[in-house]
Image 1 (tube, rainbow, N blue to C red):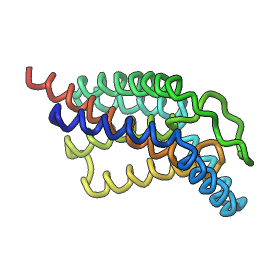
Image 2: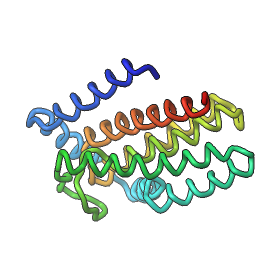
Image 3: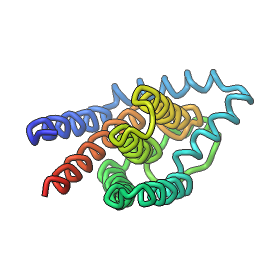
Image 4: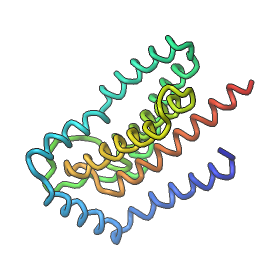
Amino acid sequence: MRKKNRSLFLLLLFLFMILTQYRFFQSIDENIVLAVEKLREERFDFFMHNMTKIGSFYITFFLTVIFFIFFVMKGKKREGFFLFINFLGVRFLNQCLKQLFLRERPNFHPLIEVGEYSFPSGHTMNSTAIYGLIAYFFVQHQYANKKWVIFLFSVLIFLIGFSRVYLGVHYVSDVLAGFLAGSFWILFIITILVKVRQK
């Protein structure tokens, strides 16, 4: 990814983040959360609880370790090493952004109790970067069909993000910002990886 494109992507990301702090966008966010609440059913509640767990610290860390071992066994130690850099880096960046914007979570009728600030969604941002990089490695090294990998991982990341709105712990803009920030981070990591390979 060229430096000019990265700068433009970062500019759009922060412009979006700033706009969502205005009351007009906040009211849209609130109405969407209330509308999604009307979709709740017991069977969906169970599914969304499990989807949100897939984006949790414990599951993403566990899978990072599993795929680290997988890539090392395949002779791809560099990929395994970058999985951990990616895991730690995106979580650190997410915490920095949360402390920058200090946005409170929606407090209508949440189905789970969570702490910390809301913007951007940590589950969404971390999942986008972590599962996205795993998908990138699978496609790059042709471990699985490219179209299926992209489709399945995209659906997984989308459902994790949507589950946060469904459970009432994030606004839609939190999730969208998480997608954007996670995408920027993974592109940043891939850029570094490519430069390391060229040395």
